Length: 127
Image 1 (tube, rainbow, N blue to C red):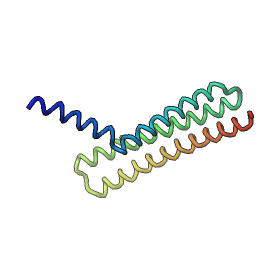
Image 2 (spheres, rainbow, N blue to C red):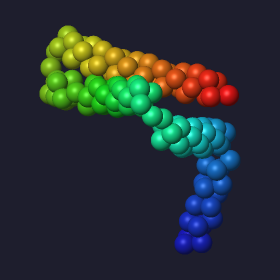
Image 3 (cartoon, one colour):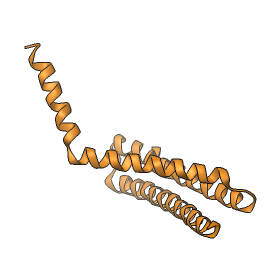
Image 4 (cartoon, helix red, strand yellow):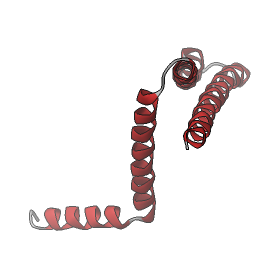
């Protein structure tokens, strides 16, 4: 019996490592890490007004992430869900929380796109 467990563990690990979703996820994660490293390198080269604009975009991205997390972890929704409140009350809190999630997501996305657009325009102007 003890010999079966290591063989089963190796099989599961091999299956996970060859799963297309896992492979795509790893590729996306590596690309994201490269993009973030390149972005931070570019941010360190900025001076003056461009640095201030980039800092405001980064602050907006951080705020957007924070608002998104607040929407996910909204205590009003979770307490009403687990306390067994009426469906209408739970739906009201769900709607309110989802509005926070949507607002935070789009705030983060808009600031990120602005930052990447600023980077693209800045690199074109330097050439």
